[in-house]
Amino acid sequence: MNGSRDLPSLDLLKAFEAAARHLSFTRAGAELFLSQSAVSRQIQQLETQLGLPLFIRRTRALLLTEAGQRYFRDVSQALHQLREAGISLRNVRGDRVVTVTTAMTFASLWLVPQLADFQQRHPDIAVHVAADNSVLDLERERMDVAIRYSTRRLAGPGALRLLGERVLPVCSPKLPGLKKLRTPGDLKGFVLLNFEDPQQLTPWLTWPVWFEAMRTSPPAAKGMLRFSHYDMMLRAALNGQGVGLGRLPLISSMLEDGSLVAPFADRRYSTPTPDRAYWLISPPAARERPEVQTFVQWIRARTAALEASAAGKAASK
Image (cartoon, rainbow, N blue to C red; front, side):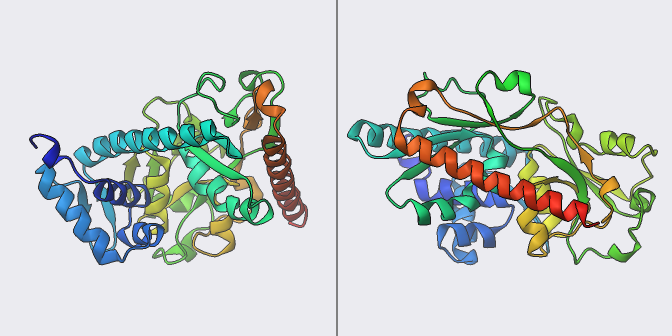
């Protein structure tokens, strides 16, 4: 590309970011209020401008090329910075805005879907979600609330515990041979979907650690697909490409609506992370603002209800 004339339009970049995040043109279109074919055409136009493919298109699956993965990271960061610029202007103007920073996975899988309830209850308060896997300095970045998955010590003084987490195998209900899955040893005939954190900060989300927790040797699986983003791994599971490790409560809604199933229903096949949880942190100055207090009260009530429901289901089994 040469000069600003060849800079991809914002619409093309937004379409690419949504398609890469969902690994689906259809879901990206639903998010952007476009048809699947419109998103597909935008991606083709972007690939033509860049001069290389960003996706590997298969009959029932969509994967990122190596170049696509690199571009996804850069585009996501650029769009995040543009959103931050807009929220900064609104803060200067004095609007009632609560800025929340959290990891991209927690934002997309749990927080954003829950925000419809908050908006219905508090239409006068705008919530801006800054999804970023980096640990930001809240005061320097002018953030009101952070939700972080960490140990109690790393969360720091004054942090409020929101949710714990469990890890268990999940897959599409349409996965061929699903009825054969009874015990971990039965996974030998299936493709395993593995999340590989480039920084190796989440080893408990990998199959070797899960099999170790099950006190069994990993079977000779049919194959292994590896992903550098957890959302992509989950999309592959939804698409029926294999069995992945799901994170409760992040995937609770997918289990409830049947888009994912847990083949091993027994609770002993889910591994807890007792030393880690989701914590809410807020700077002292932000905690004084009524709109921040309202948001904190809402999310604490929302997560408490979720944990109570999970505990009730476990007790009934």
